[in-house]
Image 1 (tube, rainbow, N blue to C red):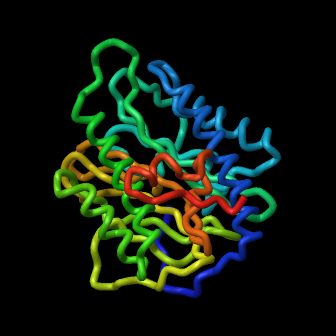
Image 2: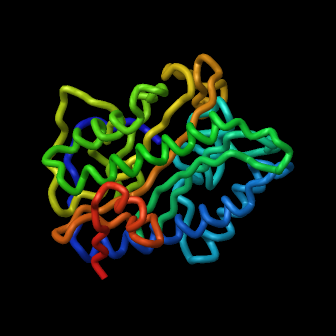
Length: 276
């Protein structure tokens, strides 16, 4: 959610990173419950209710609910919807591509993550090209996260995402990753493509959400009349993946992954480094 101007970065202490991990695990649990609930016949509003129960049951608060007037605890975007879809009466169908974005705040500290999946009811409606899109988008996220292990400047994340996508799909440029901590969206911006702006230096205490948004067709988007839902202009299907990561003296810790990012980072030769 949101674009940010270049402003001062909130550098986190190790103890603050540990507090953010609490929020990250709530988000991980909520998304796992939602993933388990995704099926033909389920409404996007029902998915939202699942996430809210998990978040509040953990003693946390949904970050999205009421944020700039947003009316739900999740963003649920289907098919040509890229991000910021408002949950409601829409019924998921076999073969739909669904992207789910979730945020939670615990003790004043935020976590933010997203996943995409293809609804598979066993009816043969799943398009292999949609599966490939979802997998490529996830892979580009992990490439961006892993880049932080050696990056001197934050712009290297966007370059890694772009290289991972490889020109096969359209990378949505108008919506970006972001810093995160005592607010859900903070500086700096985290681009999903190369830029002449190399970005700020990467150093311990940096906490960001890396979130590529990728479309099967063109990268151009429009916003619907609800002033939230972002759709591809050409109607092509899109996917969205996101994780919150902390850079600390010992390395990288993916705060919204149960394993700290161990499995995803290992694909790029990076060892996850939890503080605990």
